[in-house]
Amino acid sequence: MSLELAHPGKCRHVLLLAALIAGIGVAGTVRRVRAQAGDQSFPVMGASRAWAFVQAADHKLDYLPGEVLVKFKAGTGVAGQQRALMALRSRPAVTDLNWIAANIALHRDTAESDSTILAAQLREQPEVDYAEPNYLRHTTYTPTAPGYAAHQWNLAAIDMPRAWDINTGGSSNLIVAVVDTGVTTVNNTFNALTWNGNAIQSVAVPFQMSPDFPASRLVGPADFISSGVYSSVVVDTEGHGTHVASTIGESATGLAESGVAFNVKIMPVKVCVSYWDVQFALSASGTTGYAPLSVDGSCSLDAIVQGIRYAADNGAKVINLSIGGTRPSSLEQDAIVYAVGKGAFVSISAGNCGAPNSSECPPTQVNPVIYPAAFAATIDGAMSVGAVGPSLTRSYYSSYGSYLESVAPGGNDLEGGASGMIWQATICFRDSDIQSVLFPRFDRYCGTPYEGTSMASPHVAGTAALIYSQGVTSPAAIEALIEKTARPLGTGGRNDEYGYGLVQPRSALFGFGIAK
Image (cartoon, rainbow, N blue to C red):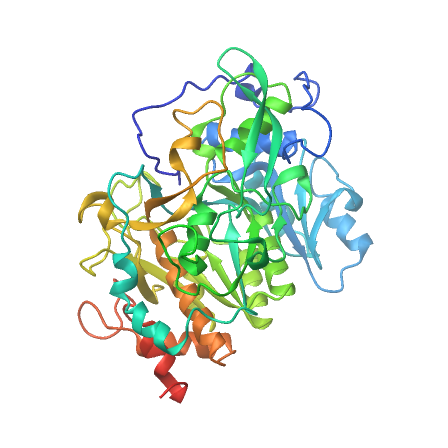
C-alpha cells in the first residue's frame, strides 16, 4: 500500500546506487559522509535501516527485506531458541537478536532477503509460537496544500461545543499516546546532510514545537526510528503525527483550530519514517540521489509493537493508531491486547481502501481487510474507525466491512474541496513538500487540510479521553459507551458501512448517569 501524495504529477527522479538495484548489502558499498558532530546533529536513523525502507519501496514490498519477527514459546530457554535459529541458512546467534519484549525478537538476516521464507522456516520449529515478516504499515491519509479559509465543520458535526459543556477538554492528568510520525518536542536547529541535486550538502534544519502544544503538555516522548535505538527526543518531519495529535488535543491559544480533548497530555511515540528521515539517513551514509517518495509514512511492525507497549507501560490511557496495512500480524494483535490489558483504550483507523483503484491500496483488491483495524472487532477496548464527510455519508475512500465499529469526521474532498477536509495545525506543508522542496524546515505551523481515516480515528480517541476524564476507566466500558450512544447511519442498526454509527461525545458523556 503506497501513500497518496499531493501533486502526484510532480515526481522527483530517484537516483539510487547500482548496489541497491541489485539488492546488495550496504556494508562496504558506500562512502560514509559524517554530519557535523555535536548535540546539533540531526537524530538520523541507522544506514542499514534506511536502506531497508528504500529496498521495500523500490521493490514494492509490504515488509522490510531480510527482517523477521519471532515469538518463542513460553519457557523456551536460550538453548531452545538457538536450536530454532539454526533452521535459517545464516545460523544467527541468539545474542544477535534485537529483543522487543519477553520471548519476542527481531532478526535481520544477511543471507536471505525474502522475509516470507525466513518466517516460514521459523514457524516450522517446535520452539516457535509464531514468526512473521516485519510488515509495513502506512499512515492512512491524503494531504493537500491549504487553499481555503480554515473552518472546523467536523467538531460541529459531532456536537463538540455542547459536549464541552459537560467536560471542558478532558483532564490535564490524562495521557493520550499518538503512535505515529511523532510530534516535535524540541526547539532546535539540527545539522543534516542531504542531496542538493548535484552533491551531498550539509544544511541547517530548524525545528520548533507547535504553539498549541507547549512543553508542559508533551510527556514521555519516544522515538523508535532514529539512531536505531529508543530516544527521548522526537521530531516530526512528516506532519501526520502532529495533525492527528491536534485533532485529539490541540488548544486554540496559538492557532485557530481546536482539538476534542484540549487539556490532556500528549505522548509522542514515533514509529513511522518520513521521506526526510530516509533522505537524511541515505545522505549521511554517502548515498547520492533522492530517496523514493513512497517511503513517506511507512511504519515497521517492530517499531509499532514497541511503541504500543511503551505507551501502555508508561501511563497512556488512550492510544491512537492512524496506520494500516493488508497483512495480519499476531505480534501487533498481541500488543493491542497487552495495551488494553494495561488499561488503555485503543482507537484505530479503518483504512483508505474503500474506493476501487485507490492509490493507497493493492491494485488487484477492492476494499481489502485492513489491519490492525480488523483486530478491533475481537478486542473489547479497541475500536476501528471509518470516515465520513460533511454530509455525514461514508467518505469515498473509507474502508468498510464486518470489522468496522464506528465512524467519525475524516473529510471528503468531493464535498467542497479543501473545505470538506479536516483542518488542524501541523508543520507547514509548503516548507517540507517532498516533491518540491530541497532544503526543508520544520519550525512553522499552519492550519492544514488532510483527509483520511487517519483523521477520523483521533476524534474517537479524543472522545475516549473525555469519557475517561469523567471517571469511566475501563477500556471495554469506554468502547461500549461510544457504541451505544453513536448516531446510527445507513440502513438498520449496526452495518458494514458505518458500524454502530457516528461518534456522539455529548451523548456518551451523559451515558450511564455520568452527567445529568
